[in-house]
Length: 298
Image (tube, rainbow, N blue to C red; front, side):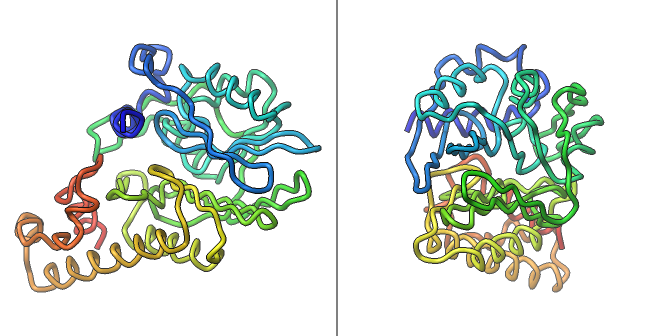
C-alpha cells in the first residue's frame, strides 16, 4: 500500500523529470520492486511509471526510466536481475515520470528511442494544464536519439520488440511496446490499472485515442499475455478489457449528455462514472477529473 501511495503521489511531480535533482527528498522512501515475468523480463516499480526490463545474450533493455534521483536504485535493481550491460531504453511518452532518468542513462552510453513527438515535446517548454504545471525543456542529452513516426522494431535477445504509436491517446506521442515471442506488453499510460487515467489534453491526448490504444493492446494480447500498465499492478487481458469497456461506457454517457446541451459542470454533476467510482475512483485522478477530460475531448 505504501508503494502505491508513493507512486500516486509522485505522479503529480511530472515536472520532476526536468527538475529531478532538486526533488531528491521526494524520493527518499522509494524502493524499486521487481516482479519476474517470462522471457527473461521483469516489471520494475518505484515512483511514477512502471518499467519493463529484460536481459539476454545481446544485452539489456529498459522501457521507461522514472526519475533521475532513482537512477542508482534502478541501476542496482537491474544489476540484481542480471540486466547488464544496458543498451537501449524505449520511452512510452514524454512525461517526466517515464523519461526523468534519460539524461543519466544517456551519459552512460544507453541509446534512447521514442516516437517523434516525445523528442519534440521534451525539446520545448510544455504546460500540463490538468496538473497546472509548466515543464521546462529537457537537457539535450536527455532527448531520444532515435525516433520513429508509426512503428519501430528492436530485434534483441531472440525476440522482436514492436514500439507502436497510438495517436492522441494519453498524449500525442504514446507507444505500446509488445514483445512478440515473450508475449509481454507494456501499455504505457494508455492503461492505468485499477484507477482512472490522466489524459493530457494539453499535449495532444484524448479519450478516443486512449480507447483506440486499449483496443490495439487487446488485439495484440491473448489470455496468457502479461500486461504492464503505465501505473498500477501487473495486468491480464481481462483487466485491460474491463478498463476499455469502462472508458467506452463513460465516453458514451458523456457524449449523450453533451449532445443534449449539458455544460461541463452539469455533466460532472450527473456522475456518469458512478458505476465505477467505488472500484476506480480513489486513485490519482478523481471521477470528476475523468469526466472533465472526456467532456473536453469530445
